[in-house]
Length: 182
Image (tube, rainbow, N blue to C red; front, side):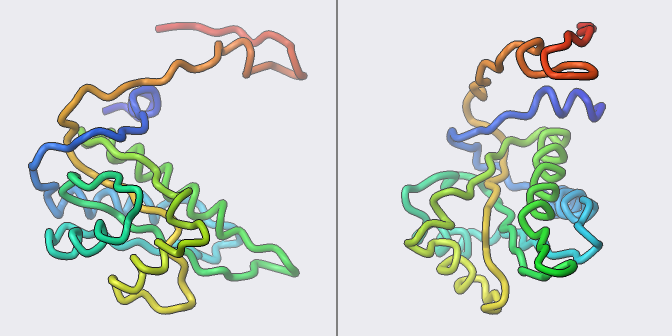
């Protein structure tokens, strides 16, 4: 798949997944895409754990509330380590965001669906830490996100985006940029 096609086709999928395993070779390619992302001052604050063992997935889903992605045959857990690049600057959030987007594009390019699940696992209920403990993650790492991965059992629902002309300009705010559809 062409990169620009993957960008246009990617959407957040919150539906059920088919019970078709994700080959480890595909998981490896997705992990490689994530680790190829840029990293502020090359501190490489992002680490990843792929999970495809049904028993481990079951343990993880027992602590994820509300349940989401529970029928996916695989997931990738995203870890960050808060490392200061210089002075008081830490780029951990930017680093893991870039890694997640790379993985989401790779997931789409390989024919799978996923969704960036972060909000409710990083809240005060410490779901991310509970997941990290199940996976044996040391305390200095924070599990900030997981990506369920699999083949969609339903047609993905694409959200309507605001018109291009309302969000993209050239040489200044509100200056029209030519848009060409191919």
